[in-house]
Structure formats: structure tokens, C-alpha cells
Image (cartoon, rainbow, N blue to C red):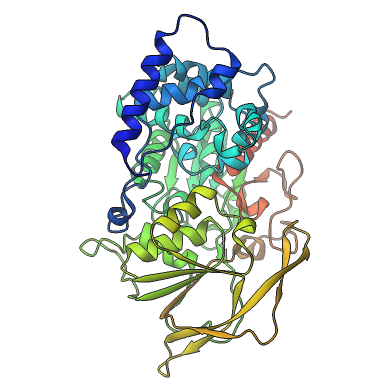
Length: 495
């Protein structure tokens, strides 16, 4: 499985065969081309480093994989893309080896192809609708759109071919963007292209939002995010760091005192949820947010350059079944935990995490304790974690999410000895803006209420991304950023 040389040799052989054909490829020929497996670092090696796990397709693999696309007239894959990339057209260029033209097509709709190619859940978006996957009755056999996107974006960056967008003449209008995550970056770039002055206000000391503090280096190298931030700066966008809107400056003051004509709120959903069980305040219990921020943003894994200490643990339990839980578990392994458990109260089938992330976690030796949930966290007598009392579950009828509801089994208690617990059961919105801004309407979960144009209850203020959707994905946040940018442009021109 990790014989990368074999994957490369096979792709070279296949490509040579396909290119020697005299007849054009028919649909059935394209469907018969085997899907290209992603080369990866060996699991035993990668748990000792923070380098990217998936090492990326080779040139031959990209061309072969792109040739699997049927170029369907109806392009069903596009309807699965939140930003509407012209997928068949970018794949057609990639199949011809014209990677610069391929990434050019993506950039008509998406600002962050190197990031989205790595972290988008393609199997539940574009690849879900792929005709190839449907005809083979397996979404995992769909054309690997994301892997090709990653390759062409990396190709552009590595060959210094990035083309900066043209900036329209200055309009004299100023826009404030709160948060430098995917929604904020998208809005800022679109508005700057239109000639508006844009300032991003970032609460942290580094821009990038969840892409910097949340997603580990081994899934998304921070140098790639930095490149996107640098692109924004070279377009003339200003970024103010360590600036917490609601504390450093009230939201209304940005308009009334600082003269901004419109504001976009893309501050994300960064307030971790807890289980509210006994022992959750013991030393050794972390939210996934804190744990990942210490590792990703403050480089806790790099002992010589860390800006923060990291809690040492031998046996770590991560509570939850989403991508963030996988990230936390795989990070704990890399930070020296000998044993890492994922504790999840449903079965693997109901896990919201990406199939690839679950597979990578298993390869790395993470153990899955399914149909279990903690009742309480146990104290070692000195205020530190010594273990967890778990209860076993079975699945009952589906709940409102469509997943079968976990039902506890009476009398099934068991003790799991652990010395660290990472809680990864989702995030809420930080209430700071809502509490410090009179007239900003939110729902019962604290998400900002917007109309279809992403306009809030306040004049000139728009919002999008996780602060509106609850926790979502990078590409969904970007999709909202696009809609908001169009709405703000209309608003600024008085339409």
C-alpha cells in the first residue's frame, strides 16, 4: 500500500499505453482506467514527524486520473462544488498536461486550490455526483478531483507561475473584514479586486484562521496558507493582528469612528463544546481547539522553537468522531502518546470524519472504541486524569440528523485507564460580538442570522462562514465568502 515506487511505475506504464492508442478514448475505456492511489508516507515513519502524510500525485498519475473524466455534458460534479468550479474544463487541461491552464480555470471560481485540494471533503461534494463513481457504484472510485486540484495548484506555486489578479481603480470605499479564515480571505480578495480598500482584523497573532490553528501541518502545511496570505498582502489588503473586535474595538465603532463603509463578519465558530461530566476540569483534559492550537499555531511539537509547553501523556483518549477528532488523535500520537483511543458513541458508518482521515488514523495505530461514551473522568487523587468510566451503547432509531440514535446499555460500565482526554464534540460561536453589539440578531446557538444575501440585521454588516453555518468546511465558508462579496459590492454601489 505504501509502495510509492510501484504506484509511480504503474502510472508511467498506463500513460504510455493510453497515449499510444490511435482511437479516441470512449466512455467505457475511461471508466476502465484504474483509479490512481495517492502516494503517502509510511505510517511508522510519519508518526515520528509533522510532514504531510499524502505526498501528492506524480505528473503521470495526474494525467491518467484526469483521463478518467467522461467530460459529461451535464457536469453533475459542478453542482456538488460550493463555489461552482468548472471541473470538467480544469480536468480536460490537466489530462493534456497543461497544468497552468488547468489551475487558471479553478482560480476563476476558487482562491485557495492548494488548500481545498487537501482539506475539502470531496467525497461528499463534487466526487459524490461523479458519473464514473456512480457507474462503478462506489464514490471512492470517482475521479479524484481534489487530488488533481492539489497537484495543479502546487505546480503553479512551485514553478513561480502564480498570476496576480488585476485590481480595479480605487473606489474610495473601505471595508472591514473580521477574521482571516477561508470566508474572510475570499471576501477580502474579491472586494480588493473590485477596487475597494480592505482591512482584515484578526484576533490571533497569525492570520489564516482555522487553516492555521485547527488543521495540522501533516494535512495542510502552513507555508501554503502563508503563501495565500502573502498574495492578499501583495494585492494591497491590510491585515491587523491581535485585534479582537468587540474588545479592541466595538463593531459599531469600526463604522461610526473609523469610517468603514461595510463590514463582513467571518469570525468562525471557535468556542469549544464540553460534555459537562464529572472530572472535566481535571488537569489533562483539553478541548481539541486548545490542543490543536498549541500544536499547530504555537509549534508545541518543535521542542526547540515552541511558543507553549505541551502536556505529556502516555495514553490519550479523544472524544468524538469528526475530522477534528482525527486531527487531535493523530497529533497526540506524533507528540509522543504511546496509545491513542478515539471514543465514539456510534459506529464507524455514522462518523462524520472523512473516510481518508479514518483510514490514515487506523494505519497510524489509533484504536477506535466505538459504541462507547464517557460517564465521568477519574481523578488520580492529585487533580490529574487517571482514567474514564465508559458506558457501552447500541444504535436505536434515527434522530433528526438521520443517523441512528445511540442508546446506553444499562450496567455496561467499564474503566479505561488514560492520562489525557481531548474533547472534540464540536464548537459553538463565540458570544463576544453578540454581547457587545446591540441589534445584531443571532439564533439560539449564537450563530448570526442573515438573509440569502448574507446581510445581518444591521445596516451595512454582512456575515458568513462558521459564524453563520455553525462548524462547516473550508470550501463552504469560501462559497459564503463569494456570495457576501457580491452583496457587499452591490451595497457599496447603492444597488
